[in-house]
Length: 171
View 1 (cartoon, rainbow, N blue to C red):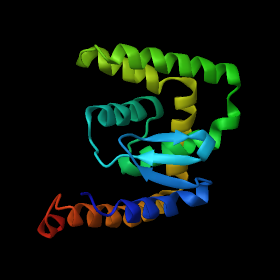
View 2: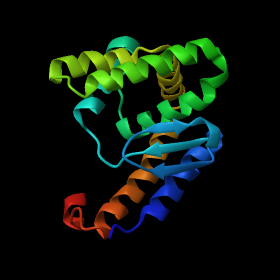
View 3: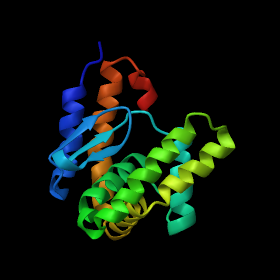
View 4: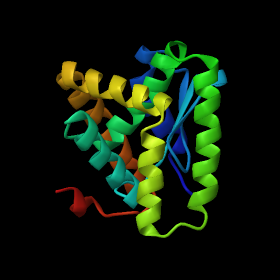
């Protein structure tokens, strides 16, 4: 049984509360649940998709992400902050494209997967959320550093109590 989810969720939630997010919940992916104002986050980092996203951010926004976990959370906050900036027809287009991309990803090889991921990252709602996160990170570097320090401690504790690494690994 995995221990410490509640404490980790509370720590991440506390960091996102100032942005109007009601709760953060550990899940298998990053997402923003509009109707509940909830951000979900994942524990695994540095997957191929994560690397492609950071590469995309560097390429399109000329921004080097220092803390991918924090940036991915802020990208989801960006959906919350920019929700009213996109009309319904654009959201409908984005939803249709996301469904198409998801369907094509089911049978795509690595090269095609990267192309599809970049199409996803380039959708209007995704670009707006990413732009919000980039601008926030650029204008609030000390806040980002503080958020990371709070969350990394909670992540390390979570990993330790679940035997995912030893305390010596932290030195």
